[in-house]
Amino acid sequence: METTAPDLLALSQSDRQFCQFVEQQHILQPKQLALALKIQRQQRGPLALILWQLGFIGLQHLAQFWERMPSGAELEPLNESIPS
Image (tube, rainbow, N blue to C red; front, side):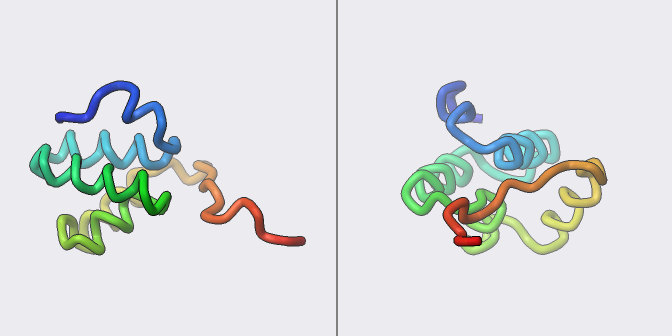
């Protein structure tokens, strides 16, 4: 993978886990992941959604990833400034 340690450290925990998943499964080319990470830094959206929007991953990959996530895993909110 072309990403450097600081790039991965800037990601949310779920995005880091997704990067590990696609790397272990050999789903993406390094250039595809680098492009998605660049877009993710600009849009600040979930990496998995950006990869799907770019057509780099399919719904089956998303399903595989979520099936592997521990049932107690906490999801980070998309928008932390939602009024109560």
